Image (cartoon, rainbow, N blue to C red; front, side, top):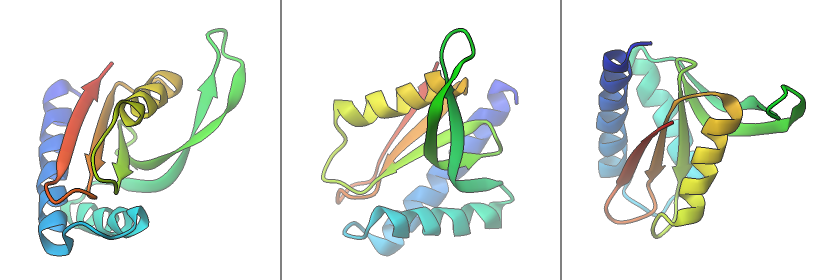
Length: 124
């Protein structure tokens, strides 16, 4: 995908996340927000895969294990969802680690747990 396509996709995801947060507010489990985002993204035509396994490889290509992205959108964007009071450095490190390990360039970190929705975009 081109950078413009990624930007457009992120705009759509942000809009859907804001709408979901406005409807549900904070206070639910992460899994509720995950299902809500799946439902809303499907309606926009984006392909979102929940709990999608991504292979972690060493620099020589050796498989070290797998992690599960909360959502993988159009096979290009990793979304890590949170339902906590606020995002902390460990959440950022988790998403960046996922991006490095999977070879994906773009990621969104979305926190539904605060009274005010938090969305951060990261690019490797």
